[in-house]
Amino acid sequence: MIEIFRTIPAGGTVFNSIAVFLGSIIGLLVGKFIPERMQQTIFNCLGLFTLYVGINMTLNTKHSIAVLLSLVLGTITGDLLGLETKLNNLGDTIKAKLHTSNSSFTEGFVTATLLFCVGSMAIIGAFNDGLRHDPELLMTKGIMDGIASILFAGSLGLGVLFSVVPMFIYQGTLTLIAIWAEPFITADMFANISGLGGLMIMGIGLNLMKITKLKLGDMLPGLIYVIFFTMLFSV
Image (tube, rainbow, N blue to C red):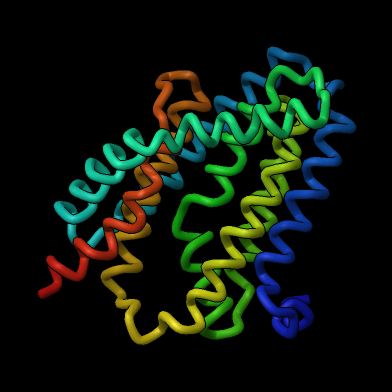
């Protein structure tokens, strides 16, 4: 199967998108049969596992100060730009156009988009696909995302299904960028991006368990800052 998607442009992203789409459909069909109490239990388990994944990702960090500065400045930038608000508004706009009564549409759209897009697997996987024509990492991520989307769609509804769109655009764009960025991407950059992404993933885990209400969308500019700070600290 890997060879099939290796011959398709951005094949890893295509597989990942198909997996989330199918998982969301299954979740929408069977989700109503899952008791609310069990849904929260499942989300606590997902949150705990997501926290674990985030911690593992942060262990790859090469320059902690670079990651810290990127997180702080990225969050300030995101807050000034109102990224979290705009992401929420995007979900509300889609919900309004669909005339859906699903009150969890925006939460599902935002949570799933952040979970599926932010992290080392999405970034490094897309780069592997673009630089080496190797979709295996994104296909592994696709299986994980597909399973998660069943549970998310069952609890949060239709918004999870529409997270396929920004995920496809995001990962597909990264794959295209990787084609010309190869000479500029260093091992330290990969490591620090993974570390910062891990912190965001930890935030998602805490939010899923309803421990915090972090505005993770505002942190996204940090993924750009970390590249420049890594260059600075590597001199």
